[in-house]
Image (tube, rainbow, N blue to C red; front, side):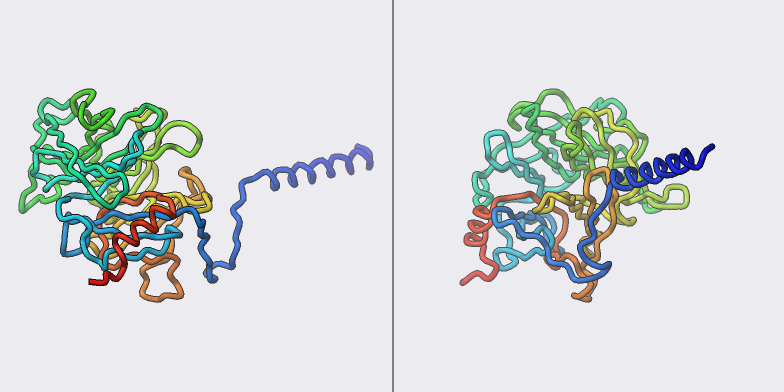
Length: 352
């Protein structure tokens, strides 16, 4: 090989490496690790967190945020509805109205709906009584309906209503048998009045799941389901009681087995929002029972995910702040105009 050819080959190798480096995915680091951060705020955007509180399980409370990271209680920390009970889950339907789902408890045979045009006044909308007999893959299902949740699929014009149901009772010697038999069920409906078919399992895995929330896949097609892996953690099942993710081409699957944990063990009630600048997914989850809320973030649903520092007791370390005592609920994006109306209707410090 001549010297000229050797130089040309070396130059091509260097150029190839440079091209690979410049085309590889990069993640901007705006501040030194651990340095102070100023959250991005969009003057047109805000967020609502509908949730319960420690010591007042199932009652509806509101918190709000303009950056998706720092939350404040509305209505002076008092309930915003005397009628609602459940694990608050809100979806905006194709008609522009908001729909809220709940129940009186896991032993309530009815799933109950409320509707609102402004997120301030909720009106009873109807009920649905699922037939839990003869569900394929879940023999002898118990009459238990856990934490109903709503998702509206704009592509199909259908609501996905999901919940978890077990088929084994717990016992003093094996309390986890009940939770280990939980499976996620679903039905589809165009209007929460008519339902397309009887309940079915959303996942065919032989694994306990609860608290499922669905999000359109940001890859451009398909859907992703955040689930709580309800198996008890052990050396044989290290992912137990964590939040995990599975994505599928269709709303009702088939969903492949979920990926690695996005949270530590003993976390539940996931809820996910997009940051105001659209750069990050913010996945919140509760450390039960009512200990605190955790947060993981990622630039896309495919990751990479990492846990964010917050609720640490050291303000300088915190990158997010939750309403103290907030428990199970759901977060949704709203406009700043809606935020202002909610703050006016439910001021942080009521005058009376």
